[in-house]
Length: 316
Image (tube, rainbow, N blue to C red; front, side):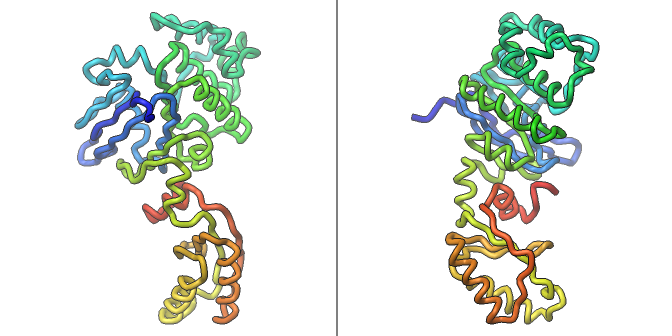
């Protein structure tokens, strides 16, 4: 049985002059799931979240959180959400405990500070001033402040940007624990590995629009292949156009290959059967006098999904 929708975005639009930062975004977030907004910088992820949080008023469409309209019932919305902004300004001279207690005082209902700090691994830092925290510790504190009112839905906007790998993993563990506790989480990120690890479903965004929405596994499955072969043909750029077309045709006939992509750094073959495709590629290269360089294989990723749909990398 499908879980009820805690969050609904209905045709959200946000314009700045003639520029549409968000252009008709619609989706639902189910109770207890981690829902990812994945896309490159400038895709409209943060603006979409801010309209759902009630921080920005949409020019068109509406958003509901726990059944409350984020424009006409904003006070009700504020009581049931927790927000970690992309950039959080904290009071540097307060201690971790003091700032958490201050945030708790803003709400009619709040959770005990001690267990909250323990849940984000900040118990030992409770008496430290905020200015003495590392980047990762400040991000964990920002998450704690988002949880202080025991929200129904938690919004995490690019929570691991700029953090080192260990700090990123620490935040991942916190998100997964929140999921175990039944929290509904909306997470924006441009890290494909983060989205794949944490999210039950992913809303892939580009240029203010939703271009795909499904589970990470289904998005990759829809590529038609779960393995990729990457390589370079060093003489390809110098070949005559007719010879280039011949090479492309050869690559498309390699056994088990479902699609061929030509990128600036070389070629990518998508294959359902990696062994058959590799064997066929080497044989085709030998038969046609092609030199394969920097050949490597890997599992298909969400990056491949984005490139297939937009022709660009998530990292651009």
